[in-house]
Image (tube, rainbow over the protein chains, first blue to last red):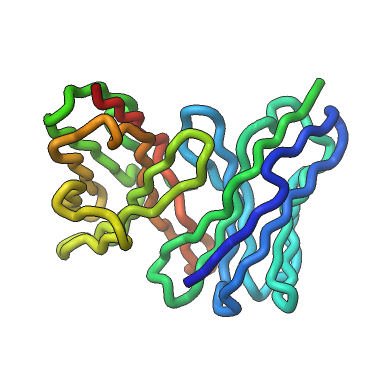
Length: 113
Length: 118
């Protein structure tokens, strides 16, 4: 089955800096890669996603890049703000997984004011 | 985006009792919903896939007789934790795929239910 590795496990940045979180996946049949933000005691919130026919997607301060050859994808947050502090999860899904997502281990992002 | 709700948001029960958690898709229909379990500082672990009108599909290692799933309608799935024990204490989250632009689906999560078994 699919395996998703996420790094780093913790990331600390100063307000205004950029943050990058990286994930690798094992199944070359994976074609959908969402990123979720989870605040303490809440459910994951979709912040951006990318499909395998696209190499990069951007939404304001957030961007995701996908390298299918290397089987990795990354989340980029620019101009970080304290409210960006949360746990971020990457995930991958294959066309044959009946919609099931495989999650990375999560990254605790702390943005210091 | 689409909205998924869960009820209750938190529940405390005594060991040996059963607890039911509801998951609803508020503004879309979902023939499939997913149930996850999350322990503190860990990732989400898929427990089962809930299918409207048919039996749920459980992941390996998940006891189907302990975690009963019923997908009663296109907007409601329930998870019942039977004979709960302290080790069942966890954060339970459901999700449902909703069609986004271009006919592709995106998975939306509920706010989660914190279960504490005394």
